[in-house]
Image (cartoon, rainbow, N blue to C red; front, side, top):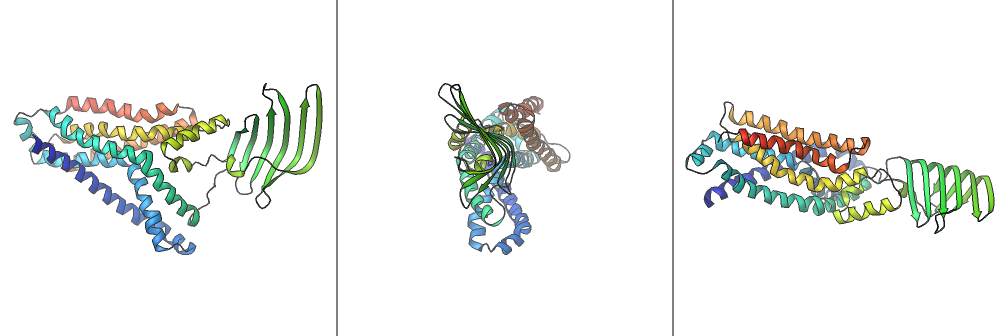
Length: 360
């Protein structure tokens, strides 16, 4: 049986890596056609384009769509084996249908699972860091998104709130700063209709400001139309800096989430979803392998074409379902852990049904 096991494992892995290389080549060609004008206009060198951008662009796109590639690989080579009656010959020779599935197929799936776990938690974030350095230098601004209802904790007893922050002019609206003593009693409050950051000076200008200092039963009230001051705050502190979730290894991501929670930051679901996704996606390897084997091991009229169509449709549905559940988590309050694992649970049930109904 070792010969058969090695044969299937080589077929599985070989088809997977061939699919990955083919898709990576197509992705690079499409991306070059879209960005070639920007590369030329911004003066990016060929060395930077190839070694800093595209060599680090490929891991992200490959491992993001790895469930699709794995499912297609299983469908493709298993359907070929079925069309040549190899699977029928193996089972007629006394080898169990489940023995073929749970030994060579699962060994190959385990190898790909380990590769994806390392890539998602460490390799891809490192690659994204280098790719983003190129992107922010030649293609787009580092901070391009405005923020709303931002809560921050800038030190042990100081909290800041703004109703909105605009990246383009470094301006925050409805600003409030509150300081508390160790007994959690309010000692100082500063409010302004608008504040604006001056990068050359490192200072903030407050417009229509009002302050209240509290010392026991004594209070001091001050106000004015305009005031320059310094704060332990910079414009980038307002932004969630969503690109960071793609550039931090998982230990760094965990530290970032804890740090932001201590500051009182809201809307961290995107980061928490990313943390769970890095493990949930590799786990789908086993589910999609079982599903693909169950579908393609049967010899049917239409052969490879029918199997490939089914495989692409189902794997695409998995990716779409994952995106939908992520959106519900970040915008509709669905718990991140549930959002990430819903596709795995749904397709896990389908895979069990298919393997039960498969021709044995």
